[in-house]
Length: 195
Length: 195
DNA sequence: GCGATGACAGATATTGAAATCTGTCATCGC
DNA sequence: GCGATGACAGATTTCAATATCTGTCATCGC
Image 1 (spheres, rainbow over the protein chains, first blue to last red):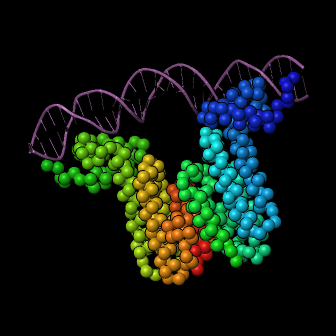
Image 2: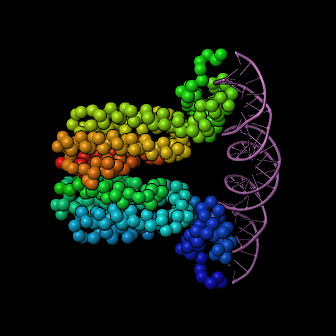
Image 3: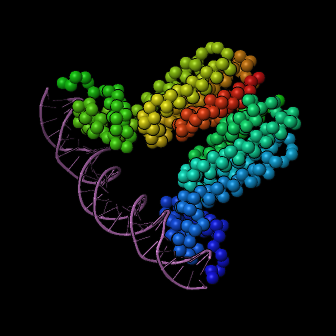
């Protein structure tokens, strides 16, 4: 009997470790199995394909960010402050992930490029959180009625801040002036939503 | 004596043609020279390297767009209308380039990735045009004083519309709902700038 | 004299044979 | 019986030999 039963979670943990160590190009299913001390056939008992395994890792990683932001979205202070906190939180989270361990971030960028479905769900989740803040702000009387509706306005806010959360722009998150640029866009958005 | 003298312009024309025909990966300096009926050594008499030649082609291509927009920026109607026309003009121009001939567009995307300096100048040019419109709008009393200043506000507008002009997003310019998304962002920006 | 040429060296890209990996499944041991 | 195994076929990647390309420059023809 192995030290622990083989579960999807343990496999995901091992896959993250292997991806961290070898990078997305070199990490193989055999490596993951070896890290777990099992045969690669056993991994396929829990995940139908290598792509599905990598997608699951990506999903877990993205979910870690959306959870923390979800708390801000579900809070109950003034919507304008929550919107600021939410947008800054998103930017800061991504910026730190990119800055702290660029190699690991590059790995996830590759994974993200592979699994568009997972990313779409993640974006839909985030935009949903924004929509909650916007509707809430309208109810509080702080924001004008969303144009043309809350989901579209939320998506507009998400789109307008693209440069500060889309990993494709990670390279300029460490350039001087990026904070000024971010604040200018936030100001534009706040004024654009205000009652 | 050749039918026409060998000029930088004729070389650029031939390079565009070769890029169109073979794509960025296969187009060689020898191909360009052959298209012109000269030896490749002669091409190097006018451009110091293949990279410089490709940059010049990219610059020409980008300048074609900024010229048309420059006319809108220099116009003298109400700033809000000019801003709308300018942003729509930029989006439409890119969208058509991407939609009409996807292969050629892909070619230019590769070239753009190679020559960051040229792109930076192009972006600076466009942001400068936006700054003119914004300052003008403020002078007309239509826009609030730019925050924190016109160049930064202009850059914020440019950043906020990233999804609608950065070639990296070309894939979603043909998805349904893109027009709604664009209009929502424009509305946010107009309200964000308004007096 | 002056721009054009093409042979050349070093850098880069292509190709195909060999090695590795993915995903399946008949078989094994508990 | 049930999950784990590892041999296997087909797909993919690697690697090194080969071919092509870039950029230079001594030489040519006008």
